[in-house]
Length: 156
Image (tube, rainbow, N blue to C red; front, side):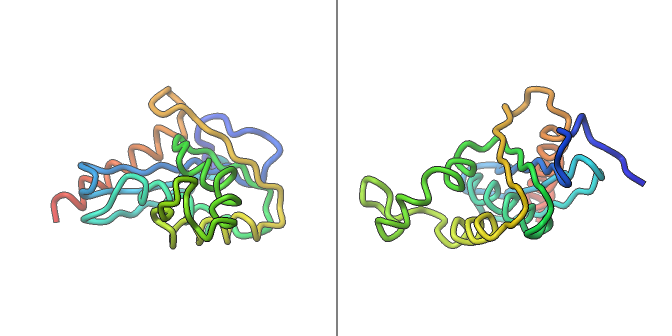
């Protein structure tokens, strides 16, 4: 039985919204994703992390869940994750994983894992930026789950 979240865009096998949260930066954090068509979710966190690490972890987990074949729409409010995955990576690779200013790319292992999953997909893969806290049901749900994880890890 399917329990759609919000109004999933038609034409995809999976529509996944991701989000990350952190209390302090660094501090306790959480991540989550919501598959809009089925309503399936997954979440986790860490006692000491950064917001970008949690955003990357959410995207990696969503890509691992999706696998390589289904037509997939990934939705995130993190321009950092979206740009790292779709725009910045080719230049970073050419420069030996250094940014344009010559400094090393932060969170390199996570970025490389995300790219490995993203680039190995055989199904159609689209990525969409969503404005955070704008009433988008799936983004709000992913945010809520990530914040719950942040609170859980803050108590430990």
